[in-house]
Amino acid sequence: MSAAIIGALVLGLALLAGSFLALWLDRYRLKPLPWLIGLAAWSAVFPVLARLLASTVGWPEPDLLLREPALATAAEALAVGLLAGAAPVVVIASTRVTEGVIDGALFGLAGGVGLAVFLALPIGPLHGAATWGSALVASLACAGAGATLGAGTGLGKLTLSPTRRPAGVAAAILASALQLGAFAIATSSCHRAWPDARLACDLALAAVAALALAAVLVSAASIERRLLTRQLAEEVELGVLPAWTVEVLPSYLRRVRTDWWPRRDERQEIARLLTALAFRKLQLLGLSAERLRLYALEVGRLRHRARALLALAPGSGAPTEPAE
Image 1: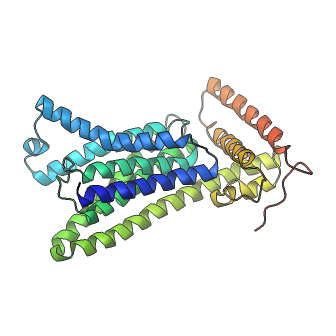
Image 2 (image 1 turned 30 degrees about the horizontal axis):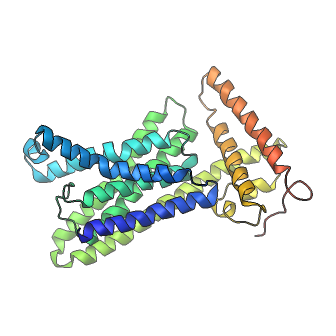
Image 3 (image 1 turned 45 degrees about the horizontal axis):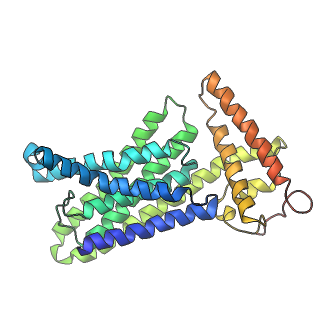
């Protein structure tokens, strides 16, 4: 096994573990784990199976179809990215498997990790030319592009009407493709300009890719915080929720702390209920009359469950204001 494959696998497993940990600390238990693993496995295995099927059936290689190796590699990478990486991320981020922008970003990251493993394989579009340095760049760049796609799809699910969501998905796919393409062009240009300093180029680009990934995740958290704050503030004004919920629940970093509610299981359930309440309210926009009634009923049910659970607070019926 080459150093490139080992590097892609090790970094991919680390990113997957980090994604699951971030979800587990927030409001989930083990539910996201099989989905994260399955998404990464699909993104890595599907293009391999497609390659094997193509060779079995006798389909011509992309180089023979397009005549230009560089163009053929780009076309193959685009096709693999859409079918193996983008399609499952869009499907999962569009369902209730994920809730919100942060969830979409983390699940998209998992899809990007799987795609990076395939790129490092000898049968991938890089044709076995990847080193551990280029595999590092590819892993971080694919993870960042996947996070962009997942976050964009999750945001569109919350803020766009059903008729406009396909356009939002297309915009997210385009943004992630441009992000990944920019790193591919930068890597190729750097290697051509400084052939004797490929490792230094790869390390520098890997640092940039890591910063880009961090920027996507921080942006996703910031956007989700603003959305949750607005919706939960409306519930406080209506008298449904206590005022402290607006200070704690919208912020990921505040939700994962333990000082705002004594029991972990109840803390996770409160976070799930109140974020689901805010997200369902956002999804009321642009719905048909029939679906609007169904979602309104669900909003009412979530309000009732949230009140019942918040009443379990020790003492006065509401937890102590969290310390700054």
